[in-house]
Length: 172
Image (cartoon, rainbow, N blue to C red; front, side, top):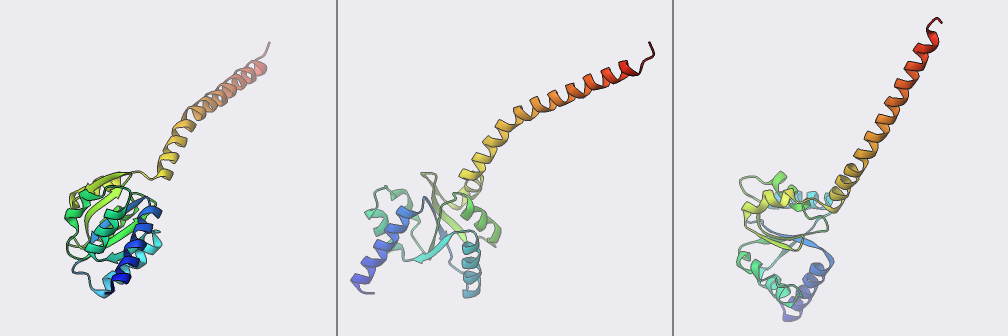
């Protein structure tokens, strides 16, 4: 590969690192062409950008970035695919869903401005809530007291109506 081509790839990787808030380094060693193609399709359906990269080019992109990605250097061995995403837990859920015998396997991840190194971090990454999930939880918590007040007012209104109806039907 020519030096100019490598520089272009490093620059493109740097742009992806800036564009996407989260990324996962995934070991795709041992995956055949059909399995890789299926994984790409699933990534596309989950709005995940999958890029297979050379480890030394990825490390050079990390070194050129504004953020210190040095904790990830140790996992840059073997065949590496990078899953770029805007939703922190989407790749973890996808890896857990499609993983058979540890393939594809999580090497490391950068999610929610934190480093997760090792395959044992997959459950922790699945547990991270996305921005939309957090907003939904907050809205549900805020709606709960309002629903309780409305329910109490409605039941009180029905109780008063029942008492008045009973009193109206009583003979004097």
